[in-house]
Length: 105
Image (cartoon, rainbow, N blue to C red; front, side):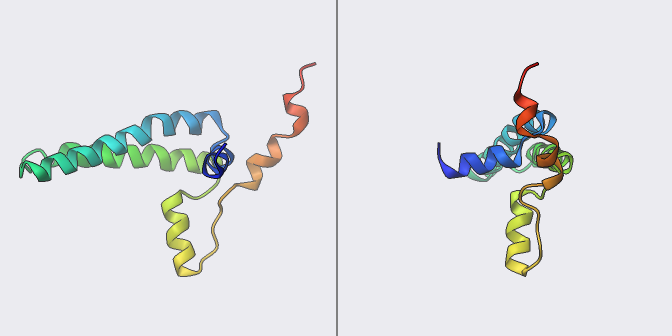
């Protein structure tokens, strides 16, 4: 398993967060595709559609990270560049999940 995928799974443990990302990430990617398609066709009359998709996609991901208690990847990058502290993996959720949680009784 690639290292980036392991880190992704560590940062997205909560089931609600995973569902929000399952919806939010594709919305964001579709929005970026629509922005590119609009610029190639020089058609900006429908600029609001990809903008709405982009905002909704990012809000869903942001809510997922609030549930997890960690920062979004883009926020981590900005904080690293500014020398600010950041939360990559939230300890509060990691403490809730102990190895005994996976045992069936």
